[in-house]
Length: 373
Ligand SMILES: *Cc1c(COP(=O)(O)O)cnc(C)c1O
Image 1 (cartoon, helix red, strand yellow):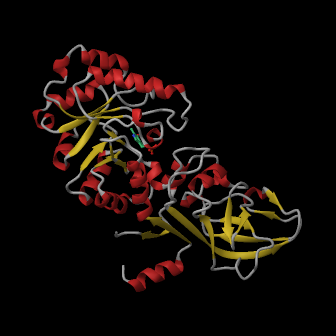
Image 2 (cartoon, protein in one colour; image 1 turned 180 degrees about the vertical axis):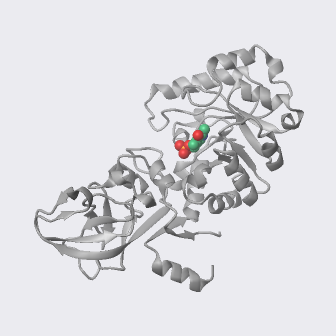
Image 3 (cartoon, helix red, strand yellow; image 1 turned 90 degrees about the vertical axis):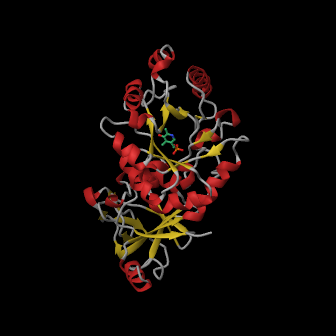
């Protein structure tokens, strides 16, 4: 886009989402710096890099030294291959029947999640020649080899013969809770599983798991949300830098009297005369409706509450007492910034930062910062 077109797009934008690519790199480096000697840091960029734009995020991380990327689906892998021609990409969702050609043509690494997937990958000489990962389930009951499947494979090692085993993975269920017994149980189960499989680089920890200490680091770790500023240690100070900032534009401001109601369902009734600012962000932008009555925004260094229900394209703020020169049509309010970040927004909406990021809508005017360097 030319500068002229960009500034016109900004002038008409109802909201501006800023993604700080340098902060993502900084977070990747912070996580990598915590690792046990010899362990390396991959990056999870599934779901369009948690909503922030995989095509912008992944090349920046690759330039910073990241050598292994994880996506969820084959299509995400194909899209990532276009921007990262020479770097390892693994697909967490596994090997779907009939997709061998996609994996080999695009040089995607499947994360084989069941004995059937392993058999199918090995059965075809064309796929068998390419590297694959194996995922063992140690306590999620979601994806990965179940315990009995692993035992059956261990009892029939010919079923793994010739497999180019790039890594063995498992995934922690409670990593953000350092006190959970499940962590050490899964660690023990993972070590036992590694003993039953051919030697290969191992990986157990995602973002939060890194903070459980060096026992959990193995050959590489697979952080996602923490790269994008979500606190990997809920309830404790966030060791990550904030990555996203979101500003919503005020469309209208009105004075309203005691007893008047705001928004759908008339769920907010004014108990005093006040002023309402209507902002051009709603649940169609991923600004979750569950934040109705509970969320807030920043304006002129103060926090103002969301009142009434968040609707599809709009939310309403009580800006009573805010300088009218600031709370006026055309100006912006801060919906996410360095002091009120993705975790605070999530808490107000009764969810987690992951959901806030991956819900971020397509209507925002996006600005990427820290592209180079
Ligand atoms: C999503 C995912 C990750 C990344 O998890 P975060 O909590 O975002 O760090 C790592 N491994 C697997 C298997 C995943 O599904």
